[in-house]
Length: 281
Image 1 (cartoon, rainbow, N blue to C red):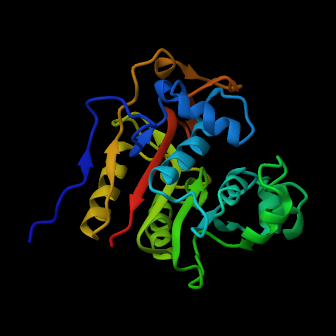
Image 2 (cartoon, one colour; image 1 turned 90 degrees about the vertical axis):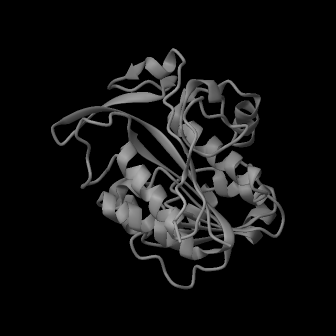
């Protein structure tokens, strides 16, 4: 039996109206839904790829009916993000995970927190009422390279800008595949990560931060499809003015879609990639 290929849609720019696995592009920031999600996370809209990652994740989950009462989700490397509070505000039961607090403090991902204060910090914007948040959100220490076997049966999983920090590209891919084990059949995985837009220049595949390229994502997508999962790619880089603007250190908080990166003696342009995967039924 012939294994089907993954779907590729790159003749037009990606949109938030129809989320697939896609890059952050200027026009997505101009869609009405972008402003709506910024209001829900209590942020002013700005052209910043890290804010886009939050919006992309929430929109992908809503598109697949994952933001409603009784739905269960687990997040990895949650750090200080507002997503658990938004999800709880919709009635989702959430397990928010991060590498153990001591190591997270050492790496600067959280600052001066213990487990109790980390959980409270995830709702510090007052997105969800305190009673509902405490009843719906649980915090656990979890190493993304060693997902415990008791994290199973979830409707969705997510991670924002964390899988690129697990040590190598091979480990990052392993994490993506292992995260699907947490899902029910037909469940949804949404992950965002770093993406090197150059196809021929060298990239970083080992170390504190790795950067995927098109070839890595195509190989990952083919493997997912071969295992029976569903993924559609749109790696169109965008046609807007800001899609051609390369930010450089010290990075801007307002015009930060693509940035010049210098890592391990290599120079390239990076942006954010969102991955949307539906587990086989």
